[in-house]
Length: 297
Image 1: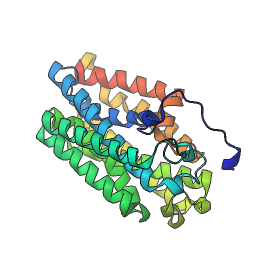
Image 2 (image 1 turned 90 degrees about the horizontal axis):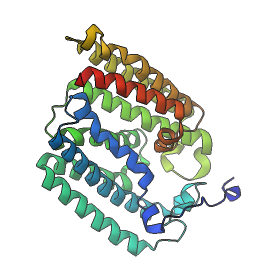
Image 3 (image 1 turned 30 degrees about the vertical axis):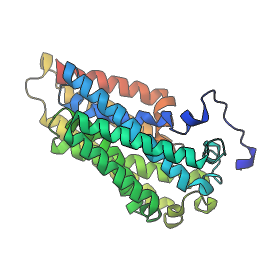
């Protein structure tokens, strides 16, 4: 199967591609807490969120490099990952290791400079990811929890960087939303590649039914948690319209659209779904407009 795939065309140098800039889309999660708190467009908050985004791009790229160094043999068996610069031999391992250290230190330094809590959040992310890369990635269920924590910590980082309180509902939606995306990612990998592909050891311990149950359970909990938040935040709505309650519709449809990608095995790379699914983008834009009216008007 993989032998029939051609190397994707790219004009970016190998050292840039190794940083996985496409996956920086995940780091946009740092805007969620300030957005939900209605403070996203305050000048100081904009600067703090932007710096948190940059810091997470630096440390996440450092983690990606370390992962690619450790997984080079498994990546060479994967139909897409085999084209990553380290697996393809375009970027030497020693160079990648030095770059990872430099980026990691720079990201942590920036985080601690912006805010102590942000620096601690980034440090926790790095420690968890290093443990994942060395030990935890081969443990089923723990694998889901650890990868989910990466999405959750991104969402938390945006709040702590600018001192926006994180409500219980925000944390629940972020937590279960993270699990939904990660379980969906594993399900798509299992459906499209099979557990015998040798690309990820933990897949040997999962079944399609278990992963389907996991992402469906997470999806239900996300919608319930979001709906409870939406109905709880209807005090004095603009124009008398319960905008947060109205936002449940595009939010749920967005979840269903993403679930369609998961169910067909096309959600192995969440950032690709976000960047290429125009229906999902449209629903996201509608949700963003409605929720912006609710929290800023």
